[in-house]
Length: 380
Image (cartoon, rainbow, N blue to C red; front, side, top):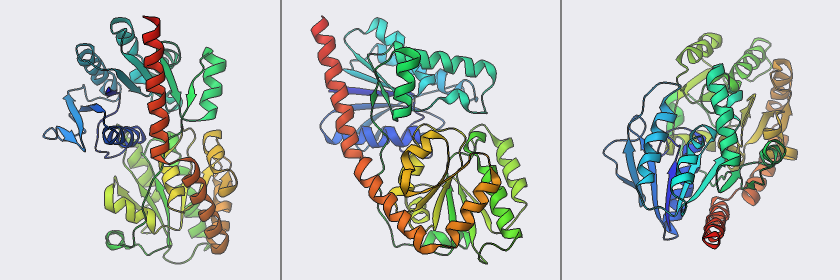
């Protein structure tokens, strides 16, 4: 089967949940014997890289601004796909899927699939015009593709009520491997099990400011052990002003560490030796960082938005979204109860292993591809 992915920045993953999703799925599809193409942006993937683990990479330019980067690249990728022979074209996220109708109209034999990852228009970085366009993209995702995949039951229920769309629920995955290596920790003077970890893009809806404020309060009131640190992994995406705001809020405290974007071995070490994981986001789809933290055996502390709470359930701690005092209380409880934190971490690990294995998920995606192609052929 010939399969193409459109809408992601690129692979191999530097940062981003959609990019991790595409990397994990595309490389496994190649291992299953399929021909896979991933469209990549020149400002994300090394231009010299034409193949990654058997996946063909097609480099195309984009207009590198916050509002036009994704859609300009998606348009060019869609035009390229229009003159290519693919059995399946799989769009990622609601913004890029706004253009899926072009292939649906002119490539009737090609199965057009979309993954609905998140209601992106809730993200504070977007202005009203971009939010309106993303809502249009959501409608296209749910009404103008051959099949829609959603990553959570919450999105499945929403798609059914809002658009009468019977989407297929296939979650994101989390396969990880612990490491005993600790060399990377020395770069930030970190000690094993002596730091709180948060991983994600530094954009407003991720809620990192609430975490920084809660940690500062704990330090000021001596409710946290000496030398215990908060490690924030990630960088902004057209949000440099917000990143600067977070660093000003941290006030230069040596126990609040900004590592920037990390991947591969360094990120593996940061996950492997953290004490717990915090996700204070105001909105999410199904967070890969949260799933991976659980798979590493870290007790998750998450905001009470449904997308977080549904994943964590009894294997983590839930605090009221945007409530710094509640987050502070929950952090203090976790830090001062190491045995209970370890128990929660192991429960989280079991939950991740049982529900979110990438191999199982890719098989489910492949079933969607095959069944969609069969339906289209029967209609001919």
